[in-house]
Image 1: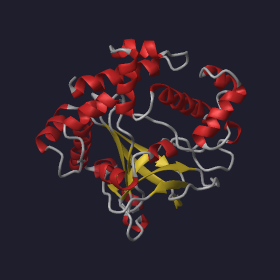
Image 2 (image 1 turned 60 degrees about the vertical axis):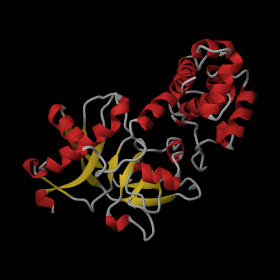
Image 3 (image 1 turned 90 degrees about the vertical axis):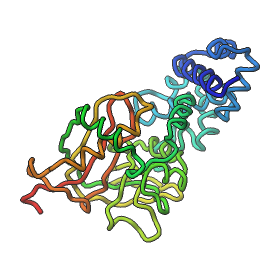
Length: 313
């Protein structure tokens, strides 16, 4: 069996699980989605994903349940029933085993929890085989960037960020996402996503020089929280204050997820050519971290740069 066929079969099971997460799922149904026998489908799933199918389903259900509890949309018993748990008690036991705390305590002066946020394995496989293992501005294909730049629309807007705190985890030498993942690990996003008090979604950031501590990386990941945020800080994380700032946000058109590297490169090239003074602004790299949102094809790639009004410099 070819490697690509294996990853496709496993992703079909992942897709089936995601679609049917709120109802009982059987191994026979997963096998039908994969196109293999139940025994073979279960073996392939665990080999590729690292979890047995029903361990994966339980972890995914508990993460989705935690996100609902984070947002305060439902009562615990309603969440438990919605994710096919038989009782409040059974859900509480499972939640406590997965995250180390009871659902009733989630977010009450406790550190963020590590959610389970799996990637689609075949999409990842395709990206890796397209050369997406490494990424830097110099490594981006200039011809591909120029083609994107010349043929796609980039939307630009200016936003204001208030004074706030930043919960972050530093790397060592990383200057971009892939280097950061090698140093810190990619699971940090699942922790940041769990923060109930987050002002916005988690971000990857290039810190200004005055915020880089000696022996730490320029590129970090974190989430912005209110100034009065006082929850316990997870080990290895840090909480710093950021002053109010003005950000110029660049957003590309929707794209196929497998093309995310080219889309990032197109935004970088557009920014290099962009003159903010035409609109009364000037780049202000020391005013705030430059940041990127997680690439999602449906909304286009989004990156933001700090600016000041020209008469305010």
